[in-house]
Amino acid sequence: GEGITNGNDIAIFDTQNGSVAQYLKCARNPATCMCWGRIFVADPNRRVKTPKYSLFTFQNTLVQAHFLEYDMKTMSYVIKSEAVKFPAAGLQRTYHDCCLSPTVGEVIASTSVGEIMVFNA
Image 1 (cartoon, one colour):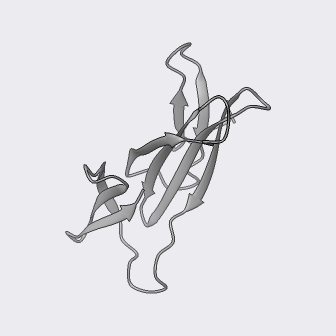
Image 2 (spheres, helix red, strand yellow):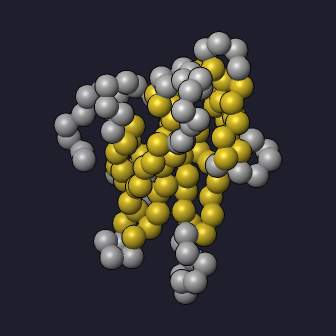
Image 3 (cartoon, rainbow, N blue to C red):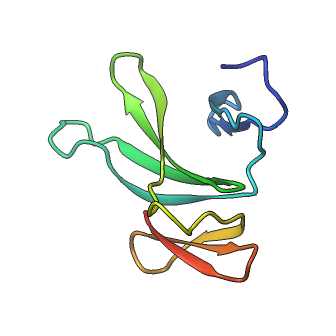
């Protein structure tokens, strides 16, 4: 929530009114890079088609996918986060740069040891 932060948090602003729409808590480690992912329709069965945004954050070895979706009950955007799953061994890396691929549904990130990782967005 707003107010008490550790200096590592990420604020997402509402550009229509300039207020903070959501905070992402980054715990102990600051984000080393982040990028917006795909934008898609949250629920195609709804009468009103609201967009759902994806954001990827990289904090040292932690990679998270965040989904910003409009909640009809609260009449505001809410964010849900989940850690990106990796194989059990061998892919713990520190990420320095990332971007959305021109290929639909991929985020590309570079690592501290010179590798490039491709994630499904």
